[in-house]
Length: 143
Image (cartoon, rainbow, N blue to C red; front, side):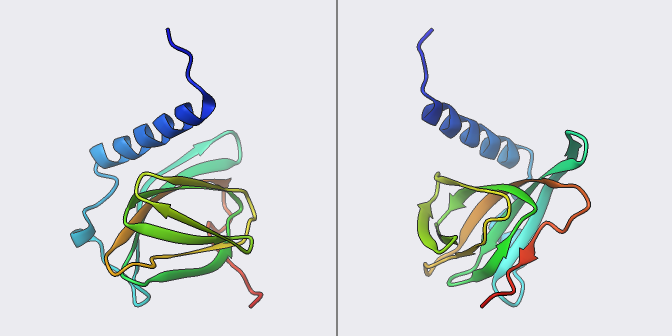
């Protein structure tokens, strides 16, 4: 059996995760997704308890052209996998630009924002591993 490095394993794991979400209907077609007044749509696919006081939550986030989600954090980690388009993140003051098929690990409590810099739609599959009973999104009060 051929040895596989950790980066390859992570990439394969994220692709399998995204594939399972798509195959089970977790990622609703973009046309069926309703965007809010800010051009953001969220479709929760899975919510499941694990490891005592935590839960895993998976959400498809759709971004209309130019749509942005403001600075925020989570009470646990987030893994963002871009499904389509380009998503530009600001993670603790540093820019990170991802295209479809790329992923980002966001540590618990890290302040970040996300936006679609393009003219077309963009979407990500966000997987949260968070403390149960706490709000999933905590808006950053500092401006």
